[in-house]
Length: 462
Ligand SMILES: [Zn+2]
Image 1 (tube, rainbow, N blue to C red):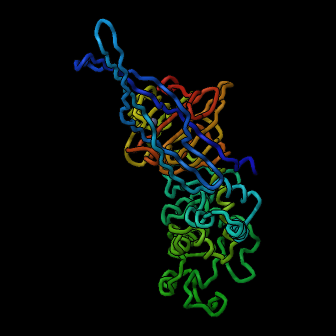
Image 2: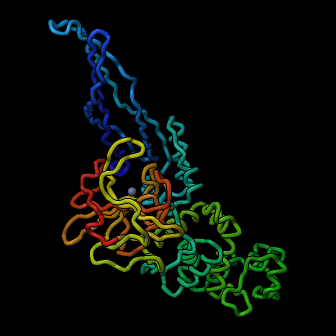
């Protein structure tokens, strides 16, 4: 655990060069200043600290010191008094820092110990009492997890992991599309409530019924409640006008004119309808809490949802290049900046652009360039939402980097296959327009000096 939470530091090279020039004067007669001579002085500066509760990004802006003039007078036999003026100035850097909270790794570790929200609150309380600073709980409540971005209504094929019965996927996906509730949360709820409809009776001790365990009064409307969520036996809770009149949540998804808690399509869509009306788009945890009024329940649904999401394979349908042999194009877009030395607008010097920029407008999917394992999935001020994937290609270690995405659909440790969806193209982090910054590293991984970076155009036909 300690090792996973140890901070990492990224340094980059900056040139604090000195410029100098001289001028000679005899009597009051001065010559032109000589050409400026530049003496490089490369120094390492800290640009990023990644620590257990977030990241601090350091940005540097260059400035030049004012000229400092030195005069020296020598008397020569031939010319009399010769005055030599030398002036020098330096390039220096001003730094600004910006810290963002990110408890993703920390949260993953606590989840692996099966800690629930109350335990997590207690951990924060203790930390605050001990004088620490922590906004983990508000991060949890606002972020809702799922690896920095989930994508309801994902346009493509989602192949569930073997832990989900494939026949239910169409219902989760269509309910997700209609109500904006993530398919893997619906799958998890279905699993937690009835073990994917394998519960022997699908009737609970408190009278909840059907595939996703609704109380009849919640299904048809609380105005029919005769106590504890039950309704009179004579009431037909599948009748759509009964539900409309009662303000219930039941919906008819299979189009048979009834909303039936014993029909799996109707039940899953009704659960999605309920979560959506409970504010799922704003606060997933709170909406799930409403379903069963318990913190342990929220944790159980969220943890299983995360497992289902990770085990699935996302293949975008349109706008994705054909599969390549070893490495494929990570997106369908045109090259807006190539790999190589270019003038850096912030550091005011020639610098290596260590990747290739691919730009396109709209909702453009980014996919894994090859089969591999996610080595990093996080946000920072430079690369924004970004993903790094480790590959083994013909026995050689290769790493690919995807920067400035809108959000991330994968997380650290997850296995991905070539062409698998990672997130949509965006402009997060240090970026001025939507594009993918894509890097390839061969024989070593991403580092401050990008020492293993290669020109992606030598490996992939863009
Ligand atoms: Zn770039």
